[in-house]
Image (cartoon, rainbow, N blue to C red; front, side, top):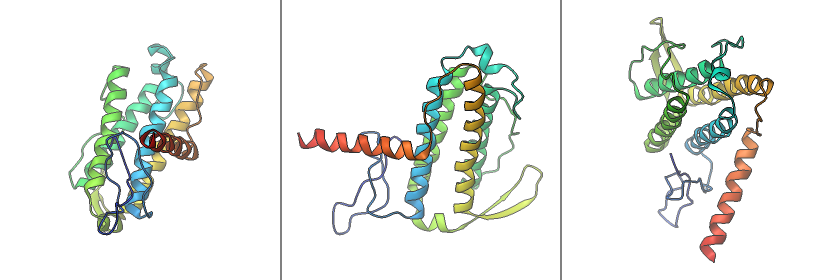
Length: 207
């Protein structure tokens, strides 16, 4: 989502996140499972963009070169992030997904980046619309082999977030070796950036 949490306006106001028109998150009145995971999904978008800024400095040949990663290249690993996001998003919605983890969705780097941005935001929008009880429930789904699984939704979303961080770390290590500058992508830097933007927005509004 291009937006985020807003504090309730008063009695009867909601403490749950909702989209803001400024494209930034605002602090919630309280942290719930829903708030927590909306922060984490927004963080994926922020961290992905930080990484993309650096990867753009590499040639297409460098991004697609086999560097010994599980999905071989930077491009292949970024593509896997898109496939995996679509896979878990479908499971969360109760839709069957039949894509392979190494299925190539976009050969062009620009198209792959845009698709990943849109998919993260679509995931965030959909989670935004779910009631708080959804985040405390169970998720029933079938794996690619047909095996049935049951997991807590909050465990699935935790896996979703840590899986992103795992592969971004792999990509960053290779990109650094190839000479790309890698920014700080840790969650705490996202929070500081968000808080600075929020303070600036409030200062501008007051002025």
